[in-house]
Length: 494
Image (cartoon, rainbow, N blue to C red; front, side, top):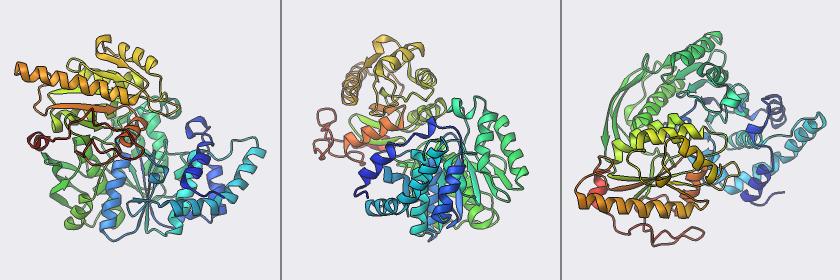
C-alpha cells in the first residue's frame, strides 16, 4: 500500500517510458476490462496534434465548467507534480484521492503485469498506468465529460481505448519522427486514429498532405468533419493588456469581441479550435454557445509554462516550446507582446527532440540580436548534456562568444540576467535598441517542458512580479538576480 502521492510517482517512474515501447493497445484494453470499462463512464472529447493540445484542452475544460458540467481533464506531461495530469473541475486531483484510487486498482494492474511478463512482454508502462489511473479517478468522481489529450500519436496511444464523441486535431508538424514517421502524411495517419465511427472531427488548419489524410479517415469512419479556415476560424484579433481581444467565426455563430487571457496568434487559433469543438460537443455543431458563458469560461483560462511571465526587472518568461514549429510561434509572440529591447535565452532540450531544428529556429529569429545564450540541462535523465547541446548550437549558427555552457540552471539564469542588464545599460546610454523594442530587458527560458517546470519550481511562485527577496521553502532565492521594484510603465507596455 502506498501512503503518499510521491511514493506512487516513484513507483510509476520505475516503469518503462512510453517512448521505449513497441506500439500496442491490448494491455490497455485488458486493464480497462478488469476496471469495469471506466473509459465509458462519461462522454469524451479527445485531442491530438503536435502543438497546442494542452492549451486547447484547458480552454475546452473551463468553458464546460462554465456550462455547469463536471469535468475530468487528462493531459501530459506535468510541470511540477504528477497530479497535474489528472484534473477534476480544473484542479489537480487531490493527493488523498490519487493515492486511494491507485491502491484500489494496484492489484488489477499486477494481474496485467504478471500476464504480460509471462508472455514475454514489458509490464504496463508509466503512461499506460497513469492513463488507467486517470480513467479510474474520473469514473470514481464521477465526471460529466472527459477531456483527454493523447500522449503520443493516436492509433496506439493509451488514451485511445476511449471512443470520442468529438475528436480534435491541433496543428500537425514533424515531431517524434522516429516513432510517428518523418512526413506530415505519416504523422497525420497516426493521429487520425482517434477519429471514431459516427464521431465528429474538428481540425485546425493543416498542411494539405495532413489535411487529406484526416479527411479520408473521417469519411472512412462516417464522421462529421470541420476544418479551420473553411467552416470556422479567427476573424479578428488585437493585443490587449493581459491577453488579446478576439473575434471567432464558429460552426454555429459569430463570437465577437471576446477576451482571451493568453498571448499570441497561435493561442487564438487554439481558441477557435476549442470553440468549434465545444459547439460540436454541446450542440452537434448546429447550436450556438452562449457568449456570456463562453466569456465566463475564458476568463478562467490559464496556460502554465506557455509564455508565462514569472519575474520582472528583467522580465523572465518561460515557454515550453520544444520543436521548431513551437519556437516559431513563441518567437513571433515574444516580439508582438513583450517587444523587448534586449533579450537573453536559457535553453535546454531533451534527447528525443529536434535540437538542431529548435536552435536553428531560435538563431533565425534572434541570432543577430541576442548576445547571451545559456545552454543548460534540466534534471530529466533524457536531457541532452550542455556540452553536446553547445556543439549543436554552433552547427545552428550561434557563435562561441554568445554561449555560456553550464549544467546549473541557476547559473544559467544568473549569467543571462547579468548579461541583459548590461545590454540594457548600453542601449539606454546609446539611445538605441538591439532588438528593435521598447519593453526593456527580457530572459526567455525554453526548449523543454522539463526545464520550464524546473525553473518554475526554482522561482517558487506562479505570480508575475512577486517579491523575489522572499524565499519560498524548498526553492532558490533569486533576490540577487531580479529587482524587487517593478516599473509600472514597462509592465503596462508588456
